[in-house]
Length: 109
Length: 119
Image (cartoon, rainbow over all chains, first blue to last red; front, side, top):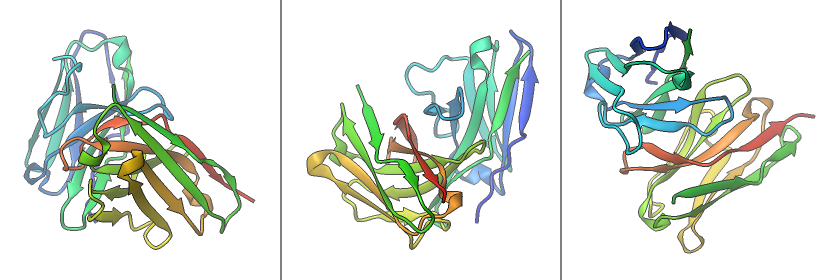
């Protein structure tokens, strides 16, 4: 089955740029979606879909890219409120399964 | 606005059954595919099941296939998850979520319902 790999944690100072990665075999051939979960048990929020698109209401500071074996969520000018767990997700058409990465906890220093 | 409200969670013994419900409002439920996603204690998100808008396409995670059954009632704007032969590892918060574009993009989520499997 398809596997998505995310680093467990990333730390960044306020105002700096956070780069969160999501690794998968030829993930560039798939479309990647990203979710923010402020606290475990709280409903996740879609922040990027189709690799680069932002739902309405998501700040322009959030952007995405996807190429080769790595997809990336970039958060510019990080704020304290961005501290959360972030999950990448794809649809694996070979198995007809949705697959989530293990999540990255973003800490704002 | 889009609202998804799960119910039916609770404490159940191993081997037991539960039926989760998800009441949808604020959008044309019959036009959207839906999914169930769970999160075990201290763990990440795990996809459980997916159903197309008409119900013709149904998919399950390997971990629940043969034990869980997803269904929907478009007339009542509701999604269901029948969970049988429950195991301790099924303990989790279960979320229902709407698929944005029939592409497994989960753009709206409920608040979740807790299922605890324990003797």
